[in-house]
Image 1 (cartoon, rainbow, N blue to C red):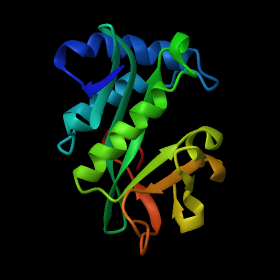
Image 2 (cartoon, helix red, strand yellow):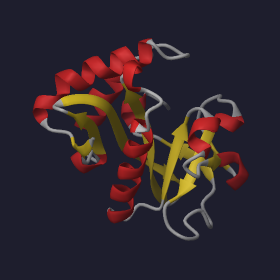
Image 3 (tube, rainbow, N blue to C red):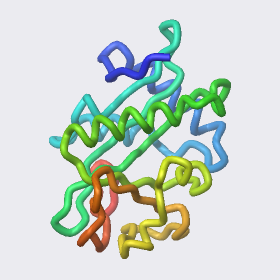
Image 4 (cartoon, rainbow, N blue to C red):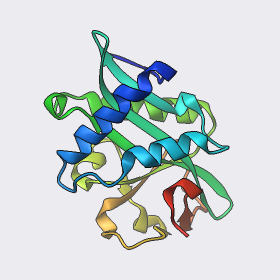
Length: 171
């Protein structure tokens, strides 16, 4: 399995993968392809923070980090993370998360925020954001809104409401 930066020729396969993965998920498809397309147009988009997991030339998974702001602090949000349903529970999502975290650290980011399954993401060190007085700009179960420091003391003095990129459509 190779985790690499997305390439232009990957976009059609990534679109199909995201639609398939989210359609088969517990919460269903919610326009994640449109979100990815809009985030790619954002001025803060960095291709190095969008990766695919490839095995024998087949894209098995995809992950994208986009900038967020919490007060005066910059961070990143993971959205979306998708793995082909037939390839789930094989560690692909975890490999994508680890690769993105490494890239985010190298780019100087101090934290990553995730809205997702707390049982899954806690395995990678994500904790309830509410424990750090960090809140979402929308209604969400507190245990599903998670955060992780990428550097020592990366959450010190960070608190407040997360501000997402305009692509998310959150005022």
